[in-house]
Image (cartoon, rainbow, N blue to C red; front, side, top):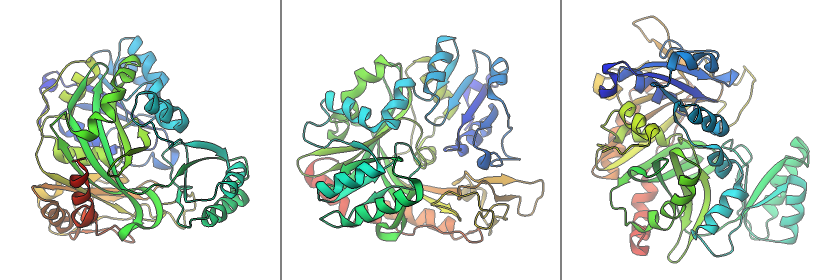
Length: 440
């Protein structure tokens, strides 16, 4: 998929904190772009060695990328920097200073959603220290959900006992380990179907169709085990702008995004039932594994699309119709974070068994690097345990699943693990409920 922008070989400076969307930098290189990648996190700096050219100081590369090149940020925390770079005349994809607040400050994000009319009922996110959260749950008995104010999900826990005793026990453990002043947010647990809606925004208008997606965050099948990052995704592109989910969520915050000159991808994860919508959180960046799944769906070059987005221009995105599935292949220490080298499964060969070039195109790198050898060139890298994703798309969810797991069966990563049920909850239960309720 070669880019029209690359008649002059578009320069792209790709800036990442911990490599949420490393495969995207590789795909941009494959399109013929001249890419330089910066990774801030020390434990992740090794990732994509031998695959994408690196830089150790992105600020020194501003002269190189120039004001006709493209700067892409794949994470929150750089919003004010993005605002300044745009003011200075650079073409930037990522979000905005306000976009950072929408995700990192859950109270602020909920306030913006409520003021926009996304929801009016009592579903506020409450911020606490761990010590005060324990006192709150003891006084307000019920099933609560604990979350952090970033995309590190180590402390996240969904309560299952009606008097809140399991949540209190978990918070007490956090207090003993982390101290009582550590911050945590609480939301009231609610029944329904979890579903997310996302879309790209160019500062003035939406680009491409809305993106309906279903996150799978538990470590094990049937949503058992600890919550980690994304272990898999089901997704499709919805071209009907009048769809109920979009109109009741993202469409209502468009004026707010315009005001902050937001340029990037934004997503609202929700619980819906027959009558109400409960917005859980805003993601104001590329999602992992959202962006890798979108790479399966898009047929237009990413570089052309992002260039139009950064310039605030319209773009006729070409994409595949159908259901896309993404499965994450992970190794220890996932879903936790540690610097213990006895646990981190890095520098281990990745073995591909008789995989065709076409099948390999559905393999998407994250914690992977490459060495100069024809036999087993790829190996695990980084300290987060995310190694790679495998994606596929088809007219039915089941057929898409079959394509993905057929490829996975040709990949051997020592000590790796993955879920085998991505998409089955939708087939078994969620699709019927969402259709009956009018959400899809």
